[in-house]
Image (cartoon, rainbow, N blue to C red; front, side, top):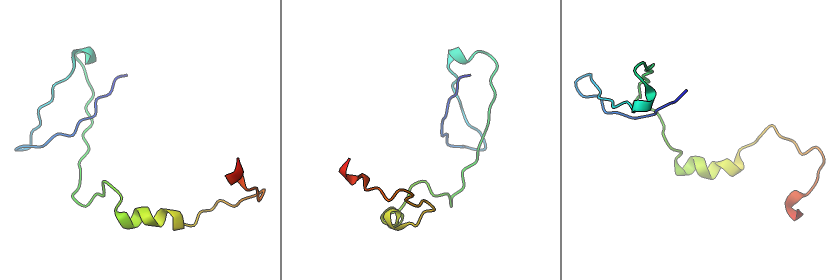
Length: 68
């Protein structure tokens, strides 16, 4: 199976796609809508909070791997 991922601008309810020849003459099309409130990238506050996030992981062997 081959895949092609594109982001297209919808103009008057239509999009224009050029399908590569190697895809053949029959294709399956899946259209996913994007919503304005979707977060595409993490903001600075989220990135800074990464090191402070508690996890479910517990150090079973109490080993200091920083010296490896």
